[in-house]
Length: 354
Ligand SMILES: [Mn+2]
Image 1 (cartoon, rainbow, N blue to C red):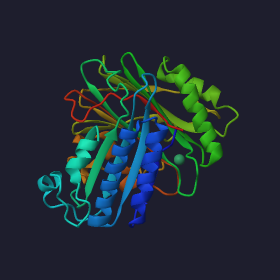
Image 2: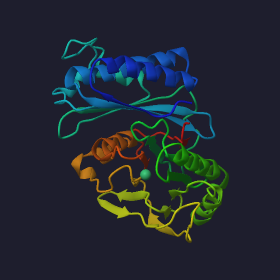
Image 3: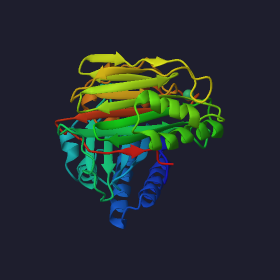
Image 4: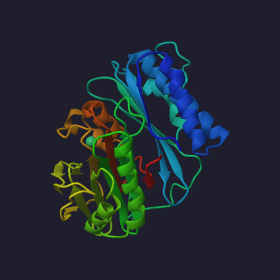
């Protein structure tokens, strides 16, 4: 399974590079030739648009593998740093192209993808969010209360490193979702080893409660260089979220205009860990939880991206990476929304694709 792909779009050569990576990822996910082709065409067009209109931006592609049901999706965010497209409605129509490209346009991208969303940053530019499924059963895990999950999670390795020392996992339970985000100390292969071991352990102890999960992780990580970690248990039935954090994994819970900073205790999982402690927060149908490692600046403000909280989780994660990623470390973000209105919502239960 291919991992995340993050490519800065600087010139024309990136178009074929992104297309190639998209084809490989779709193939590795077992997609049919037809599905591989539509991923390839949509990605090519989206990245070409950046080169034509903006000249700068990034391509982010994350395989999201369902843990149990066999479904999956390939999530793509293409961020365009340009002046923006003046007449978005016109651009949605096929055949429209301002800079002499193939002109298959945003309308075709919308048709080729299973989920399609645009976000227009106030500062200009254009963000395209697309998801592609390979025909798996995406409806398989529905949370209670008729809500739909909208989930995106990614770990970007520190530039120059071949593996990320961060990792994430998302598992379903009968009341909602359980999420792990782990940051192996430092970066590189040894951090990766610690993080991977935590993800493997999490899959076996997910039925426990947060504090017990953290104690199990501590046992599993002994002998590694250790990690910081957080577990969020979203309980859609009780309308609550339990957060258990050890060390500096940052978490915020956003309920409309209210934001809660999620509380962690200090310590290192697998090494000198003190007693873990869980904290409870309310969870509403329109709540959103964002977790990230310290490779993303913690002073972020979604207010700099007006209206983005209504966007899909992949676009929100893209915005945080765009604005706050530190190139001095591995950078991870998990964004989870439960959206009763089903706007862009999809039931996806995923774990790190390694
Ligand atoms: Mn870190």
